[in-house]
Length: 147
View 1 (cartoon, rainbow, N blue to C red):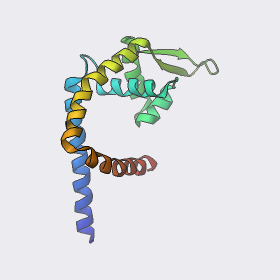
View 2: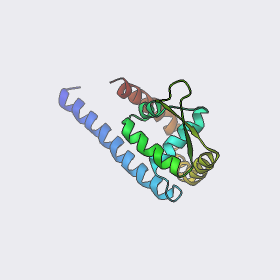
View 3: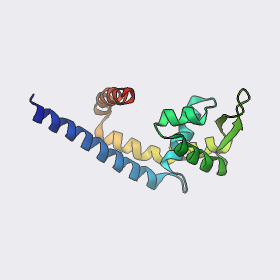
View 4: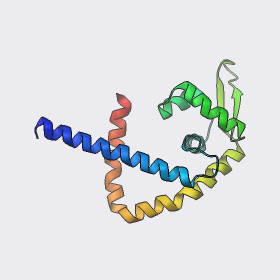
């Protein structure tokens, strides 16, 4: 494969991924519970799945955002009562974040709202195609995370 062909393939791949990202975000934003942003859902889902506390720095690293961006999201989640923020008992300069019962309920409501849309899309594509695509997307993510 020559360089032009290889470049065209790479551009086509990333164009599709970016377009899909925008379309997915648009659809998710429309079905999430009122007032919930995708970033809020993502953090609540992460905390619910992790099962334990995380520091803002750990969350920022997990989501590949600045600490300032994560602090902004966490402030909104705390204001809504979805997370508990406490000082780290070992280092009072740090904070620890845990999902609250209200946050878990908000996350569950969000999943209930988005599940039909996601299931419909996967159903239209077919389980086999989705299973075949996941390893490629995971490998691409892993390569991007190491750079």
